[in-house]
Image (cartoon, rainbow, N blue to C red; front, side, top):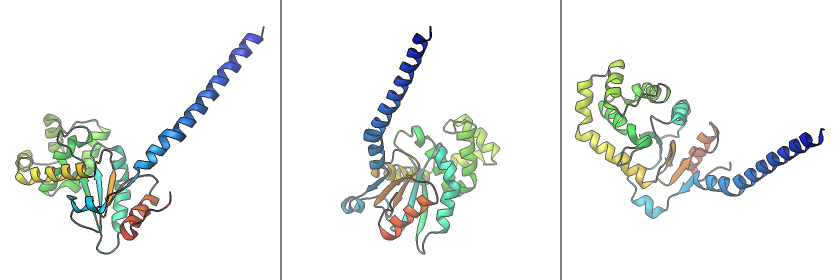
Length: 221
């Protein structure tokens, strides 16, 4: 009376083990190599010459208000800024594209707050509203309520939003994102010639960025 249940259980265990093995083989041979190939890219000197980024000795983080990992990394990025060598700079730019879709949907908010000179002090509130409260700040009604809740004058915001400075900044954000083919956030452009995606925990990743900046050389994983 126990043969059929035992046979069924044994067969089920065999299927589970086989499935796990096949999945592991697939990830090892196909997924992992592809991922590793994308975490660090070198931009040729010819392409660097045409980059919209003009300054050397700079680390540029491409982030988004809608990126949970960007929000989590804010303290780590602040820590990176404190250990930069003399003369080096850290710049944070919002990802953007012509459609302002996906993670780029909030680029106009970033650009407008930046032109108003208040982006840094309201970044945490923007993260919270978009990620934690699921408020679409790309929507005018949601945005107006958020502006009021954070003490930002709507008329001043609208004036800045329609300014040539904001249009120019949005065009610049698009050019950087497109030139370096940034499609994930956070991404880091180092010295205009390296495009790095986080492949290790902080502070080890800070050391990787600093090695690229100072020595033009990646560290071993």
